[in-house]
Each structure stands twice: as C-alpha cells, then as structure tokens.
Image (cartoon, rainbow, N blue to C red; front, side):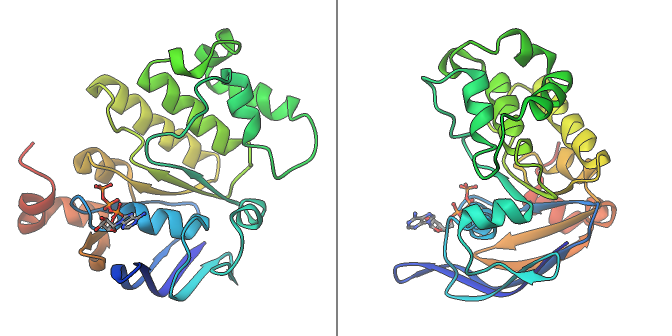
Length: 233
Ligand code: ATP
C-alpha cells in the first residue's frame, strides 16, 4: 500500500529524515516508534504532502505521490489525523467533520450517517463547538474528519496524546475497528506497548533514520529495544 524509498527531508540546513525506506502492507496496521524529535511527525506530514522531501519516492498503491499536492493525495486515498488534532475550535463538531470531505463533491449525508453510527456521542452533540469538547471527544472528531475522505491509507500522528489511560484504550480499539473495515493504518504512538499490541509491523526511527523494522510481536520481545524506547511498563 505504502512504499517509501530513500526519503530525505530537511528544514533549512537541518536534516530531519535521512534516507528513510520502509513499506506498509495493504490491510495492516504499522506503527512508528521513536523518541522526541526523531522525525516521526515529519514523516507523517511528508507522506500527507504537508512537507516537501528533498529526495526520495513515496509510492501509494503503486504511484509516486512525492511531488503531489496534499489535496491530490487525499483524493488518492491518503488521510492524515495530525498531531494535536488541529480542529477549528469555533466551528461545531459537524462543521469540522464535513471539512474532511473538502476534496469531494456532495453533501456527504451517507458518510456522516456512517460516522455518527460509529460515534454516537458525536451525533448527540453535533452542534456543539469543538473548543468545548474533551480531549478524547476532539480526537474522535479529528479521526471522523479524516474518515470523511474515504481513505485507503490512514495516517495517525499520536492519537492518544494527552488522553487518560482508559480513553487511550478506546482509541486503540477504534484504530482496530477502522482497520477491520479494510483501511491500512500507519500510526505514530507514544504509548509503544499499546501500539505494538494492535500493530502487525513496527518501525523505530532514531535521529531521522529507520534503525529497526520488525514484526510487532518480535519487537515486544526485544529486551534492548523495550528498555530504550518502551520504558518498563
Ligand atoms: P515529537 O515526538 O517530539 O513530536 P517527532 O519524532 O515527531 O517528535 P519531528 O517533530 O518530526 O519529530 O521533528 C524532527 C526534527 O525536525 C526535530 O529536530 C525538530 O526540531 C525539527 N523540526 C520539526 N518541525 C520543524 C519545522 N517546522 N522547522 C524546523 N525544524 C523542525
């Protein structure tokens, strides 16, 4: 589904990603682990088209999208749930969710119905302003907005950031449910234990380079790595 080859991204003179190559199989969940500043968000944003690579290929379903606009990538099936959610606080839940359909025509009533079936709590509050929602509710809106684009590849940048443990579990279950609908998921997650539990494959990024690529279940057994990146929990 996703094949990245030799990707290099720099901010001015500072290289954030160096020769990154990886692939994510169709229909799977892959997670990207790494310490703060490793380049995880840069990679997600570059796949979505918010950041331009210096070099490298980003193949989505066999087509190199590396030079495409974000809008064209959304139409090709790539949607991003950005770090920090990036909602419009003064718009309602429904207005925020509808924005996710901006690359497509129509009123999206069917899509909205599906989303509200998945998130009854959002349906009840559809006219509420997003700034008055809890962190968990805001994350649901951000994910719903991305689903409005009918993605085949969903990129999730730290969806559990700032959420209580019980809500983090809900978000992880939600990621599983989304994947069960046939959507390939590429996830950045600070809670590595939970991320590995729901993922098929995992990558570790360190100072802009992929230093590990392994089946998630193998990475859980990797003592050196769990000590370095996963804490002791
Ligand atoms: P975190 O977990 O803290 O969000 P991350 O792994 O997502 O970290 P990035 O946010 O991708 O890491 O940052 C990678 C490197 O690029 C860091 O050194 C960061 O300071 C730098 N960087 C990120 N965004 C910018 C920017 N807009 N301009 C300049 N430098 C940036």
